[in-house]
Image 1 (cartoon, rainbow, N blue to C red):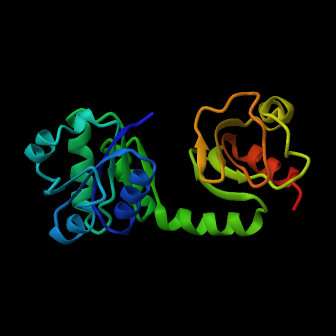
Image 2: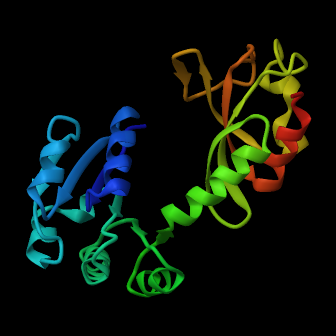
Length: 220
């Protein structure tokens, strides 16, 4: 299902978020106080705007309450990040995800209303290590300390030509399959009878320990 996103702050993190969302065919408003980053994404994002999100009237005019997610990637100006987070929530933003560079910044952002705080640099380090230690995990997003969303490549012949009923990943690992990528096509509504092929990529959600157990269960 297509969702709407407002991304405030178009540094490396914000730009990456915008480009990734657009690749996934989502509606994205990209906003930055500087003209350069906005121009870079003008032909990519659904809509772009040069604006100061510390201004309540600006956020009101942007209708922040109409977006499914507001993502605040303002990393080099903590005051702007805090004000944008606080004002967005006060104006009715459904879910605010804010970038932080330190744990102290993260705590402040949570106190002023952020529904979720992300630490891209810290998480990138964790992600590199996890990918180095895993055999089949291509990508993941930790949803909490216990749960994750992960993309897992199927190369084990024991998993190929099996359907989701046969694999029984929910019972065995506590994992729910929410998408299957086969070549360039993506099935975002997989059926229990859908068959697995070599090099298919399953997007699963569930406990981190379940993802790790599945990774171990797949032959190298």
